[in-house]
Amino acid sequence: MYKLYTAILKELRIMLRDKAALAVMFLMPVLLVVVITSIQNSSLKMINNNTVPMLVCNRDGGESSLQFIEALQKIGMFDLQKIDSALIDKQLTDSMHAHDALIAVVVPQGFSSALNSKSQNITGKALTEFGMLVKTKQDTIIKEAPPVTMYYNPVLQESFRLSVNGALKSAQQFTENRAVLQALYLSMSNKKLPDSLEQQILNNKSIINQIPTAKDGSRKIPNATQHNVPAWTIFAMFFIVVSLSTNVVKEKISGSFIRLKTLPTSFILNLAAKQITYIIVTLAQVLVIFSLGIFLFPHIALPKLVLPENSGSLFLVSVVCGWCAVSYGILIGVYAKSMEQAIGFGAVSVVILAAIGGIVVPSFAMPESLHLLMKISPLHWCMEAFNTLFLENGYFKNVLFSLVPILLITAAMQFAAVAGLRKHRLV
Image 1: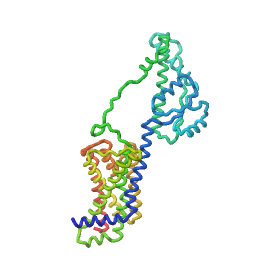
Image 2 (image 1 turned 30 degrees about the vertical axis):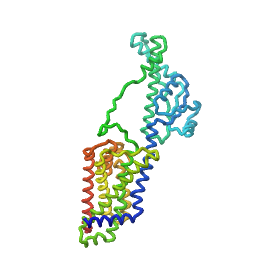
Image 3 (image 1 turned 135 degrees about the vertical axis):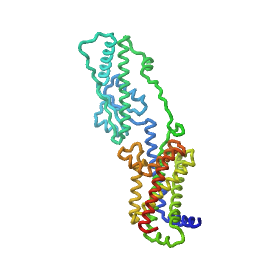
Image 4 (image 1 turned 180 degrees about the vertical axis):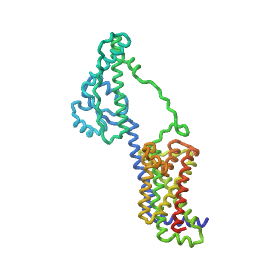
């Protein structure tokens, strides 16, 4: 036990001398977590608070166009700003940039008259079917209202643009239904449909049941902090490959592995000491970044990190993920022939594994062609384990499904590292 303690102490002293590596292991993840969480939290606020600015250019001015704008306002997604209806397309684009608006909607001239004509035609056909009107020999062709035009900033994501398009269609459909209802009631009773009755008919009172899907049955909605802090903690864990792999390469080049064989101790003990040391480092990363989310984030207008209730599972997941990251660093160090190779390949490979593993882009948004590669990435399974705890409030049995692949990948990397050391006759 004393030999193991001495070996761990030696590894700690070597690591503490490398200030640049310590900055990469602790300072870089802290900056990543703060910056990316801030950006994503701002994006979520913009969407959830329904404050997307929209310019409205009403070139029609009729009653139906005003009802369309009213229906658009009631949807609650947009902050409508009316602009001069005489603006041409180029002036409209300039106005969008001047008002810092992502979207502009143009209601074309003739919108109200065409919509009223359409509602009259539909009413006539309906009354004819009811036997209340005599059917004419020639059917009247229903003329569609001229399309509403939406201008949007190219930076607007396609998914959100489709949501805006759906909102516009919903508002237009509501306006058309309202016009048809008014025309039908007027034809049957020779008087205008009362506002109270119109509201009762058109207002949607349907209730949609919401069933919780979290493992513990709760309805807590995860915030940007719950998503980003665990994700970039995993990234930080695996980025110790830069420090650990260069440490192994140094020992190979300096002949430390050969000298260790002459000492009255086992090489496995020294390898275990190196792994224990860096697992402690990964746990320190977890502690630092999680503490940042708990204590600092509320003071910089970011949501506070809420730790899972199952602290035992959280510690186990952190240890297993840290061991996997350490195994990857040793593997790169064993097969790298120089420090430059270890730093270059190690850093780039971690970024690639993070990208295909769901750290940078959510796994459900990954293309089908990358799903197999995603399953191979150890960061994917680490992300799944943390998500089960932080986003789904899962228990140990839920996390176990993700821990088994991590342990299998770790075992494979350990075996490959030992095989590489034996191939070079270092053990």
